[in-house]
Length: 103
Image (cartoon, rainbow, N blue to C red; front, side):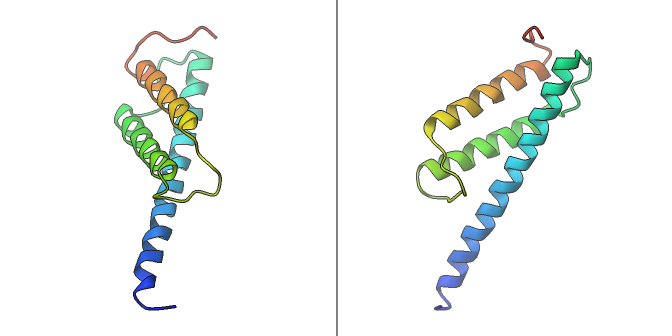
């Protein structure tokens, strides 16, 4: 392997690690928020700024995959990105005290 190839490969590996961490955080926040909504908790258990940052990061990483600039283990489509955007919007509304869907 040429020395010049290694930094690029390391960048790709770092990018995949970063995307995986963002995904793991998003999954945790989604589960926490969904559980709080289902239970009718007054406190959702997710910091609104952490939600916004994490969801934006995941959507960005997903779009990088869709456009071929990042590689994830499983395929991601524009429809997946749109579903994540809707989850982001619904979660943001719930965290801001907006109307929640009935259980």
